[in-house]
Image (tube, rainbow, N blue to C red; front, side, top):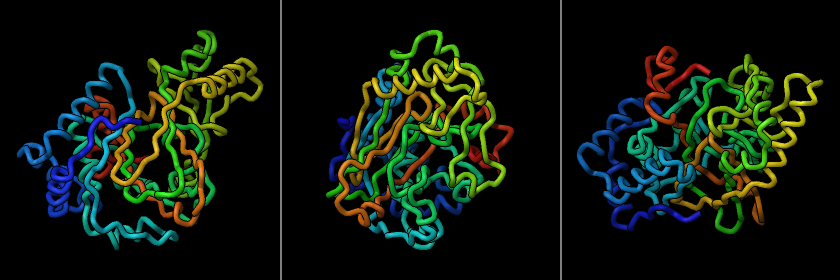
Amino acid sequence: MKAVYTFSETDRNSLSDTLTFLGANPYTDYEKFRDAIGNLIAEERVPAGFVEACRLIKSQRDEKVTYAHVVSNCPLDVDRPVFDQTNPVDDKYLQKQTFVGEGVLELLAQLTATPLLSYATRNNGDFFHDVYADNRYSGTQTQKTDWELYWHNDRTAHPVRADYLALLGMRCPTDDLVYTKYVDGRELLKFISPDNQALLREKAFVTPYDELSKASNRKQQVSDLHTLLENEHSFRYYDTRTMPADPSSAAHYEALRQFRDALAKSREQYHRIQEGDLLVIANQDGLHSRQMVDIQHFETTRLRWLLKTYAFRDDAAADVHDDIWLDGVRGRVLD
């Protein structure tokens, strides 16, 4: 994918310095961190090119031009430690002393008016997550895996799901080819008949929770009944997991089969996230996957690190959940 904006070295270094000395830790006090980033915007201390790029991303979403964007050469933390893969989240708390990458992601969220979302049962309620291999989840279908991910929405089984995802390349292999694939929901609809679209819009499907969610909350085993298609072109699906709740329903299995055929026929977008790349995609209005295309040094690729955020579509989408904010922190849900 072609970048909509590339930081100049001057702007990159300037913003990096600003974020390095922000004086707030998003893992111990997210609200203080969020407000500090808001102050940078209000004081016009953010490079104008990045501000304009965020306006473009928002306008192209609003006008339904595209739901996938790349910003390149983003500021990153100078020190990007290698985390212990027996418990990388706790090791990050110990080792990571600056929060430049987190600042870039929070700036994106505020400048595009897409408030961040976190889960009380995932990574201690953090708003910033690591796509980083955890030995406990090797070969699984979670963001902590060390291998491929099938077509999916993030948190498919969960009742509260992000509208947008942002992925920032913190450490990426230079020799091995790892690609993120994205397909727009509108592309999928081209290959699904109206009758089958209607069946996919029925609350007739279920999705088992992923391994990491089950480990975080033992009550999370299988989703409630849900639609596979909703809104104009939003999909709720995880390949190999999402199935009709009624195993005897031939009609719903046929609709699912045609949907899977549509995945094979639709035009896809590919992006190889490299260090400093910020990939922003719709989570519900499309599907994404990870492909390991050519891996020569698997142990190096296992250290690949993306910093990730979940975001609501807008303030109104966030406000729907006003009654379930956990600990009074806006955007943190009990899930």
